[in-house]
Length: 88
Image (cartoon, rainbow, N blue to C red; front, side, top):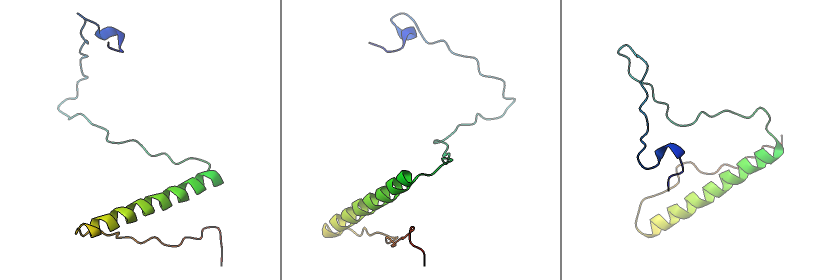
């Protein structure tokens, strides 16, 4: 059963008339716009660091499995020790 009420048996979706573009092609948007949050909290920062660590671990595990099977997959950018909270 359809979720939209206008697509039941015997009814079709009405085609809308596009605006006159005067020979210009239609602009298609690709992807979502990334809007940075106005406030960055400590919790958001720790979540970001945690997700970076998890991604690195997953990539390292995939690289080792690929190398064991004879592939040439390796991590290009090594994980750098970022101590954002400590100052020298």
